[in-house]
Length: 401
Ligand SMILES: [Zn+2]
Image (cartoon, rainbow, N blue to C red; front, side, top):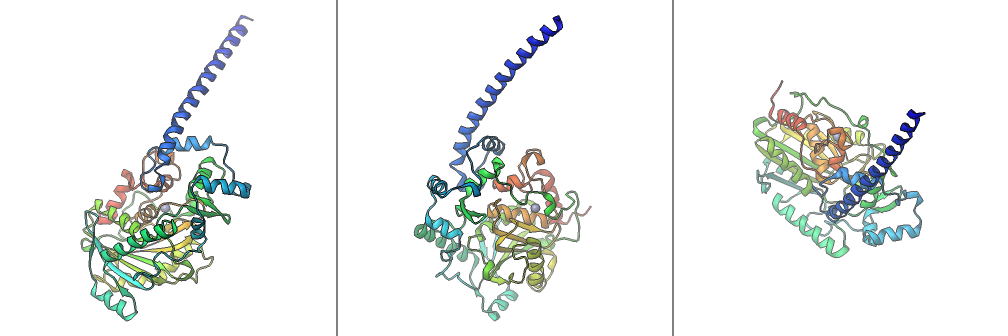
């Protein structure tokens, strides 16, 4: 009997403690909410916007007001568009109903540029005479790299003025044929109401994160050449990706690879023979088949220091690359889980230097910010964790084990 009474008392104490704990958690959530709102105002600025993603995860998981796309009524949608300042043009852009942002500029159509990135992240002109000849023969306009980026930036600004849409970071994504604000889609994912179709690591080729291998690319002769190749036809990107790709590439200077050169080729790669058309594995194979010769024939004629990234408008993943391979595919848009363009480029190029996946969620990488982790890539990190940094460093410099 006595024992039972004691038991009751301790159960009561337990209940009080539980209530106190709930109150404490609620307090924490409220603070987190305030933090979230503060961070939320900066989300469009891309890289590094989220300082504390796990807090945002907590807050968004507790948000029960979100509706899955198929549950949204027309009225709900109008409310959402108002809330996130979505205009008719934002929707038209996502549906491909606005003109290309480079239309009417000298950068429209078959254009090639050659440039190099300096250690300070500046773009300088550089010409590969062999490739220049190819361009002339194949009717590609050659525009100096710095000039091209300047014109592109002006075109982006003009487009924003004219249509209110930023082609480098549009606000709307289409999910199950419904145009939705990007931020809302992100909250749906965080709340578990929308499962990104592809979040498992099994869908991407894995590699051994500890290995340095001489079979992949490396900075032979203290030089790297990145071929940025654009798809033509239906897969031609409508979003801006060049500046983002170059920004991501410049981050590889921390591995001291010598000099980073790049080529940009617009309206080049024919991905129309890929089936299913959005299959990133098939796109990757097609890219290797269609552009492999570029690596052999130009610059120092050594293919070992040439890598290729192919941009398409849409694929079933943000990107895909073979570990220790020479090719990667990047998509300006994908189902649901859309990363910033520079994150895609940094992540995929890292795979080329044999960096493996760092998990999907932050806890899978021990809460260490890393471009190889899907969660941190989604939030636009530009960092490598030590493990992946070492792998990229070893492979880029040819430190074989
Ligand atoms: Zn990956």
